[in-house]
Each structure stands twice: as C-alpha cells, then as structure tokens.
Figure 1 (cartoon, rainbow, N blue to C red):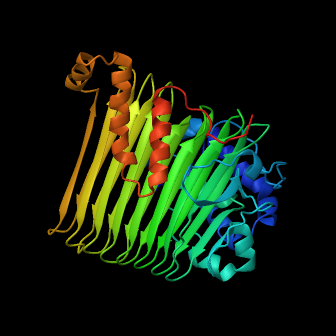
Figure 2: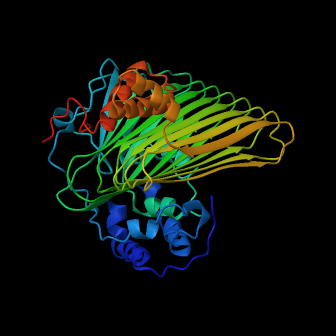
Figure 3: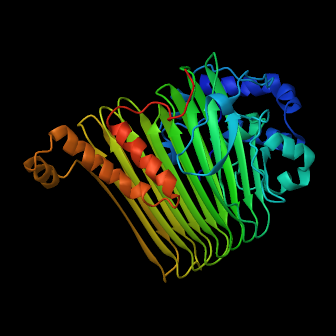
Length: 455
C-alpha cells in the first residue's frame, strides 16, 4: 500500500472534510461505539493523505479526484427505504441453495430475515447491531486489517460508514448452504453509500459467500466498500463478488484478507456491467501452509472503466498463491490490472503464479497491465506474465470455414476466453449461471437477473 503526506486542496477533498466536520455527531449517533472509536483517526488520516491523484502509484490508472467530485447525497439519518427486497429482488441462482440477505445501500436489511436456521454460534447480521450487542467480538476484528493510515479510501469509508454486515463462524463449524448477500442500491436522488463488511472464520471453519451488487434505480451512485476477512488456521473461505450495476455507478472496493496456517481462500471478482470500478485486494499470509486462489474477469464496453489492483504478501514460508485475471474490452472501454507478489525475507518454499490476459476488441479500447514480483527469499517458485491482444486469427478462420458467421465466431471465442476464470469456481450451479450471464452479456442481452420483479 502507499503512504502520503498530501494536504487537502481540491474541492473533491474539501467537501468530504466539511461533510464530516458538520455531521460527526449525527454520524456517530446512528452507528455503534466500536465503529465511532476509529472515526477521528480515520478523519485525520484522510485529511493528511487526501483523495489520491494519478501521480500516486497505487491509483495511477483511475482518476479518483474526478469520481469523487460530484456532490452526492448521503442517508446519514438512516431513513428507511420502503421496500421488501425479498419480494421484489430475489436474485435466484438456479439449483444453488443459498441463505439470502440484503444490504440496502449501506444498511443491513433486518425487516424480513430468511427463515433458514444457521448453526449454533454463527452470526450473520447488521454490523451496527452486533457491535452494540457484542462489542468485544466486533472490536476483535473491526479495523484490524484495514489500516486508515495507508489508504485514503479506507480512511474515508471508516470515517463515514455507519452500518454494514458482520459474519462470524465459530471454530470447526461448516456452513453447508452458501450465504448470498445482495448489495442493492436504491434511491430517488444521486447517492453515496459507505458499506462495511467483516467476515471472521475461526479455526477449522468453512463458509461460502456470494456477494451480488445491483443498482435498482437509474441514479448516479458512488459506493465505497471495505471488507475485512479473517481466515483462521485450517479454515476455508470462498468469496465470490459479482457486479452487475449500470453505467452511472461508481464502485470503490477495498478487500483485506488475513490467512492463518493451512487455511484456504478462493476469491473471485466478476464485473459484468458497471460504470467506473476500482477494486483493491490486499492479502497477507500469517501462517505456514496456507493457500489462496485469486481470480477475476471483466467484460466492459462503451466508456466503462475497471481497475483491479492486488497485493499478495507472503510473510511466512510454505504458502501458495495463484492469480488469474482476464479482461475483454470493447468500444472505448478502459481496463487496468496491477498485481504485486511480495515474498518477504525468510518466506522460503513460497510458490506463486500470476497471470493477466486481455483482449481489446477495438483500437479505441485500452488496457494497462503491470504484474510485479518482489522477492527477498532464495528458495521460491514464482512466475508472472501478462498479454494484451486481439482474437486469434487462425481460430477465427477455422470457425468461418465451418459456416459460423463472423459475429458468432467472435462471440464464441470471447466466451471461451472468459470461461477459464468462471470454470475455477467451486460452486457448480454458480458456474452454470455465470456461463449463461456471460454469453448474454456478449450478446448485448444482459439485463437484471432472472427472477427480478423490479420495474
């Protein structure tokens, strides 16, 4: 991550400073003490660092100043939105048994909770509520990975977030059903939402999560999201994040992972439809024998922008990391990928592989790629690579010779290219659903999920 000593000067920064100074009491009143305890330090860090410019290495591919310049509204008074999302936005994945929860903008929806019974000790609930009822549990995890001194977007989220999602899975408990969380943006005016998520898996615990981001209204939305996920020793976490919003949506997501000994993580980020998206993933190996698989796929066209930035920090020996990101960019879309594999001194027997492959379908589509290795140990197996190109001419010729139209041949090759990422998912029903959605996206048919009753 980066450090900075920037002094705020731009209108983008000043409006958030004034916002907090004028509303700090209101923000705190509608949140919990555990979250409030970190606000002032986050505010000072945000003032010191400021919204990053493109001169900052960690953010050089995305114009953050421009994204944060508009004057968005915020629901600081936590006014209820009159909607039952379970009736209007079920977001089903056929043949996948899930327990469905909703976060409306940045607030956990607790009016009509699912009937499924969770195993004893498991918590899936409002971050604010759990922090009020079990402050010692939330305090153990909240803000411990997401350091506000290193990143201004994390600092901004920490100083403004009032609620979110808290998940806790006790020692040796396995969740048989996937937890599906639908992050739904809904507003009659342009809106900023600041969502916070904490996931804690104790030793030997296992859980699978599917996070789906949707925008129900044609408004300009800005979402900041910070996820802190702790994977205990011998624990297993699958986290799938799917964005399917619209062209007026701005999403800035920072995800932090910590893995203990012999743990396993599978994290997959899919961007099917968006406006401007900036995803950051920072993973730290804390115990030996841990393994992670990070993957992502992006389909973008028109003027859409997707920037994925990853850091995998091998702090201890005998850990394995695999990373695969693929982009298909059409029209005047812009993509960026920067991935750092850091192998620290003493982290011997590290095995790491990083691949970024990209297709630019037009001359006006642009891809920026920067895979990086930083190694301070001598007994490791590490590799990285990236490619930027167009569809294979030989494959196109082969398909055309067999009577397949040029349009259909391009579509089939694009689908096959993206499917390498989809096929790495461990949930077969989700794989099947995404194969279907990816094909619809390339055909220009992708709307809201099947089963959505929104108008």
